[in-house]
Length: 93
Image (cartoon, rainbow, N blue to C red; front, side, top):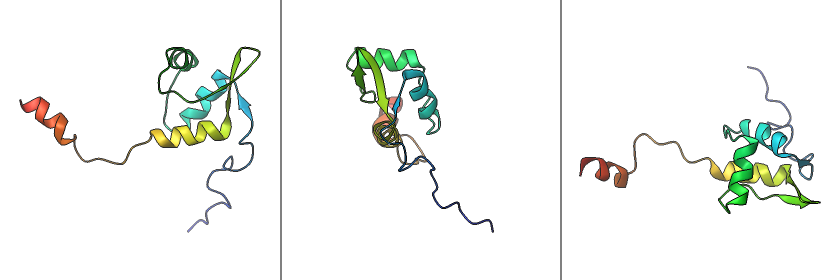
């Protein structure tokens, strides 16, 4: 057995206040299985969608690493073995 590293997520507590550009935020989200291009992050924000919150510094958006991590974790759903009942009802009329 190989022992687990001291922390499972090396970025978990350190650097939470680091501000990431949209390009960096896109790469960071990919670590959580969320693939959003920087342009998609921009569109989600500009249309008032349910994207990650960001700060603007001189009209340029930056995403705090800790806030981005929390948002990414909130987007991941539970493991399912089938479609929800409502979706199945729509398919079968």
